[in-house]
Length: 243
Image 1 (cartoon, one colour):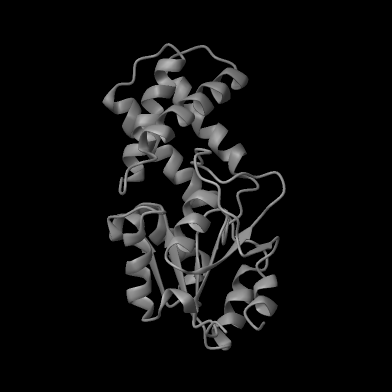
Image 2 (image 1 turned 60 degrees about the vertical axis):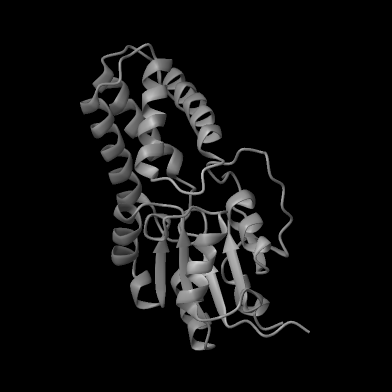
C-alpha cells in the first residue's frame, strides 16, 4: 500500500487560479501592443498573429530545462510584431511584456472553492505548496493579494528554482522544502506536459484539473501523460486525499 499523503503540491494558473476569462484580458493587452506597433489590424488578425507566435516560440523553448518567462514573452511579442508586419523595438517589447504581466496579475481570480478547499486540506495536516512555472514578479503578488499566503506553507517559482516543469530539479526543490518523499505527494495541475508528466516521472501521484472551455498554455503536443485522477473542482480533493 502507498503511504498516506503528506503534502499536496499545486500548479498556479489554470489550477488555483481560473483561466476562464484570460483570453479577454490577453486580447486587451495584444490590442494595446498592436497600437504601440502602429499597425492597422483587426482583433481577429491580432489574435491569429499572437497564437502563431506562441506556437513558434513555445516549440523553441520546450526542450529548455530553465528559462525566464519574461524572455519567453519577449520572444513571443517579437514574433507577434513580425507576424503583423511591424518592427519590435526594445520599447515595444518592454511595454508589451509589462502590460501582459499587469493584466494577468490584476485580473486572474481564484477558483471559487480554492481557499476553502486549501483550508480543509491544511486542517487535515497536509503540507500545501505552489510549484509554478512563472517568474517571481507574477507569482509573489498573486500569492500576496489573493489570500493564498495565509493557507499555504510555501510557494516556489521556476525563477527561484532555476528550473521549469517538467524538469525534475524543480520538483526536487519542492520536495526538499516540504521534507517528504515523492510517493507521499499528490500533485495537482492543469498541464499534462508540465505537471502530470513531470510529477509522475519522480513518482508522485497526480490529479489533472479540467475546466470547460480552457486549455493549458505552452503545450507542444510532444508528450502524452495520463493522470492518476481527473477532477473538475478543487473541492474534489477533500475526498481524494482521504481514500
